[in-house]
Length: 313
Image (cartoon, rainbow, N blue to C red; front, side, top):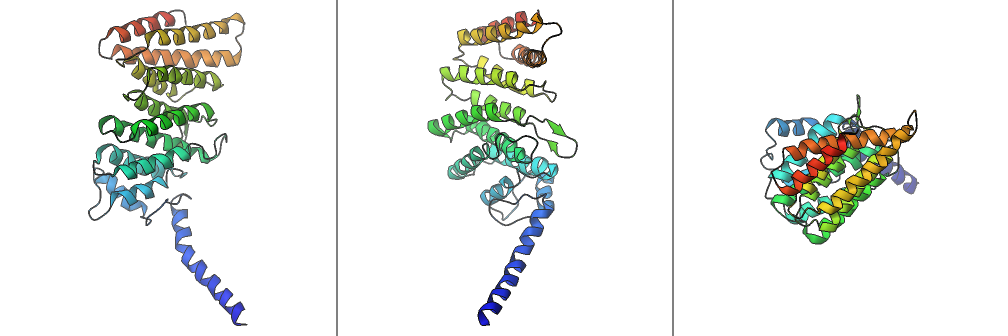
């Protein structure tokens, strides 16, 4: 008798303990923080209103861990306006975040890139996409205050290229769910990584080929500026002091040869036309970025080559 009563009352106590956590998760769109206490929405809104100052008496590392848990939320305000935006501001501008904490966040977000990979039309894309965007913030910090180191940088570059290739959910924006934008966010990450001194000359081709493959495999014409975000990554490579111009010329020639085939059929095949349009929009964006870049012979020659390629499109 005692044993059954004990089990019954233990179950009641467990329900009472878990109930506030369940209610809190529901109020935040189903996402739960990774660690630390749960703060309500108004707490995060107050931080944004206060120009992203860290609240007095609060430790930044636990708050970053809590915010990270909301990157997979279906709630666009919580996920984007608050969680990502606060993370971005703190990661890029708060100098007192320990290196260990930054690397821990990098490891977590890199792992998130594989969470539900291959799914289409599900909510798992939010965690992947916004983890890529947060990794871009870390990569931008590393440009000014290096902390990643060679091994972690190379691992992040490999993971970013794998994610660009393997992501199948290419939605840009949803009127209810807000920005999804996985391809654009990965473009931001690659642009930051491409500016890093740790990028090797042979890596330039890996990034260029990854971008071309993403545009070719999309089987749709991107409608939310994804081509421009990828073009920025290409422009960043062109503007490097160690720019591999011959490798770029071969890449551009391969794009040109592939896209010319679209007009061999009338009407053109849909997949070839989609690839043609994505490449064209990307190259137009690249021209604009290179036109505004500091004058150097590599960037000028690359811009002229791109403009010549665009003349027949």
